[in-house]
Length: 73
Image (cartoon, rainbow, N blue to C red; front, side):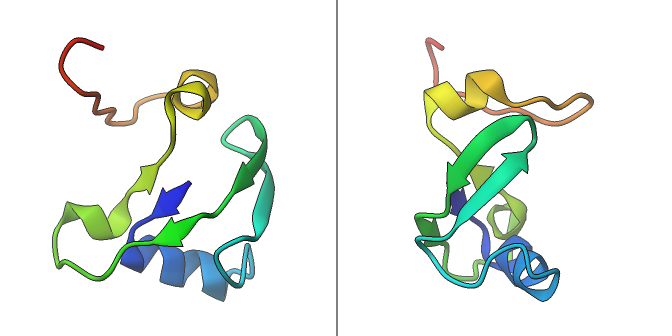
């Protein structure tokens, strides 16, 4: 998963992870999620996002959330 800058800061403060390469367990219904990167700050909505691959996206256990996909998906 790639995390937006502000979201990563919040997650670090909550001690959910400390650095890229760390794994989260039972995150939004996923058994294990590896943090592969943190976006640079943009002062846009990207600072708040979680970006996952298609497999992770399909297995998220969320409701009432905004989802974005590429065209044709």
